[in-house]
Image (cartoon, rainbow, N blue to C red):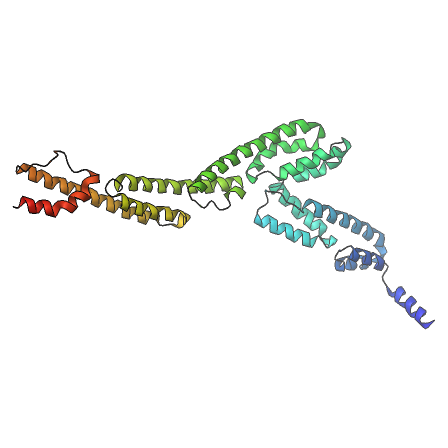
Length: 322
């Protein structure tokens, strides 16, 4: 009998909202602020219960709406989204998070509020699946396409405009596919040349185009250097040219950080030296010809002959001195 009295005493000491708190806790909600709110003024308990019901529904709605923020979200937005998800475990935060999310969505995901508010209209027109498909397609757009969606926003409230929305959205998606095809073609070419393209294929369009342009500029520098080696060194000394071409291709793996300018200075100095040596050799031959010395050919020393002439020069000079 004493145990029953003790149980009745404990039950009578529990607040009127105790069972509700237990249910909410079992559902995973954080209940500390709910308890403070419900216990603050029992005279308006019914009004507070109505607000709590509203806050719970709003929190559930926001958990669904902000659970995925779309491709337009940057890293800062994704961090913000994670913060919202944590805060929404306490429904007493729902109104504040709602205001923050709506302000964010206006800039970063403007189609979502428009589609969310018209959801019932689309459902009434038996177009709920099309409505969900539009949200998924808008969310999958590249951030660079966001300005192109602005003209479509007023149409999203009207299910009857679904054909016009489809035409406009399809045009934006086609434009994205063309740009991504351009990036893919360029990335494949650069990759085949040995360049590290990193995550270009996974970048947003503007980031991909920017990185492709940077690598193209680097490729142009390498191509100029390749031609310099092929045209100014290889005719004189193919082995020396191959050595420096190997050095050049080794720099490709280092990407933009490679000292390609330093190698170019070295190649230019070598090329200048070879041309100066060929000019000096031809000047020497012309001096000998002026003295009446005849050689098997009357033209000058060509690039591919320079090393052989230089190697034979001591013997030629010794012969002429006899």
